[in-house]
Image 1 (cartoon, rainbow, N blue to C red):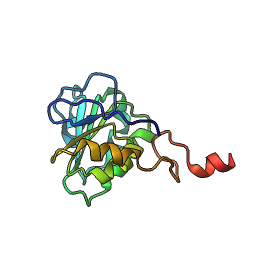
Image 2 (image 1 turned 90 degrees about the vertical axis):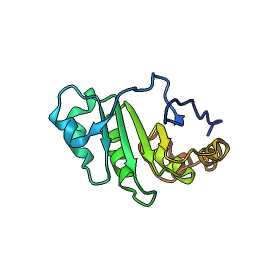
Image 3 (image 1 turned 30 degrees about the vertical axis):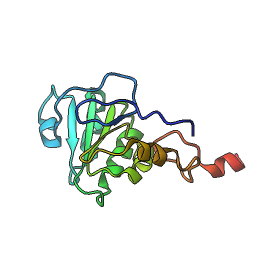
Image 4 (image 1 turned 180 degrees about the vertical axis):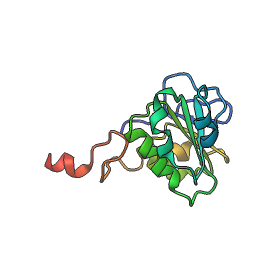
Length: 151
């Protein structure tokens, strides 16, 4: 993996891995989003079904996925589902985001982070660079090491 650029953030976004302008809109709940035709940002809570958003991916600029506890991994599945179905907008992890989860969150498709407790940037960079190879395919473009070895 090349040297990691942690990006720049504003407001509550600490890390961002996108070149486009940061979405500066309020995210609504999934239920509210589905009831509106003009919302372009949504916040997924752990009990929400991200599949409900699949017919609306083209109008979404921002999807926030809330992690109220670092032990609740449902947000990883929501992120990967959205990316695998073609969502290309900003996918932001918010809440109890820990530095040791960053690499796995990036692999699931998160490209922005708004942790409730600011992360040490040197630790974040180290966490993202620690493992140069992966063992399985994910929502990112990293090639599994077995494929590199065996074509």
